[in-house]
Image (cartoon, rainbow, N blue to C red; front, side, top):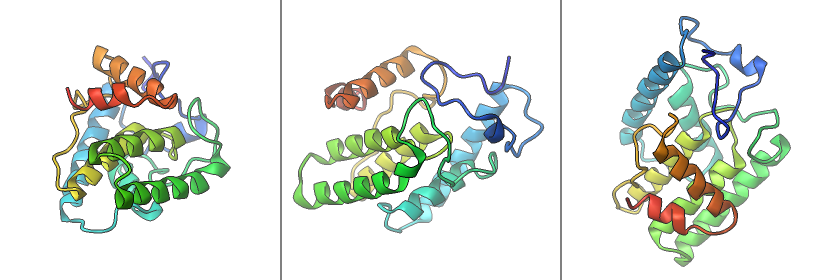
Length: 193
């Protein structure tokens, strides 16, 4: 089995991106997932000490690098190739700036509940898909950080590992697709279960 094999809802890597795997000893998808999980846990420890403003481009890039920097050379760098999801590469920075400004506006004007702001932020960040891979994971962590900034507990994402093919992942992907059409009810329900 190819360690880069994905399901229909995963973001495939380009051949060039695959070559930038730092951990050359990895031979299975399980080893890759395990290493990424360990690195994300280290990033979460770093976050406990971080009191910076999270709603800026540099923070998101730094977080992605902390999460995946020991695994991928492209960690923390915006993608430069088209994907099966996400905006065109040249649109990443302007769309991300617009999203960050929208989130600040929603917070300041209490446009939505705190949970809905975090969920919408997560969804829109996934839609932009700024990085070659790891976008769902960085987006979920950003939503949880926003909840923490609000003084709330993190959201319930239904599983510690939504990267593995499962019924929970299928439900999550379906909720994201509803949100793509402006209906956030399934995604809000998903984070409540």
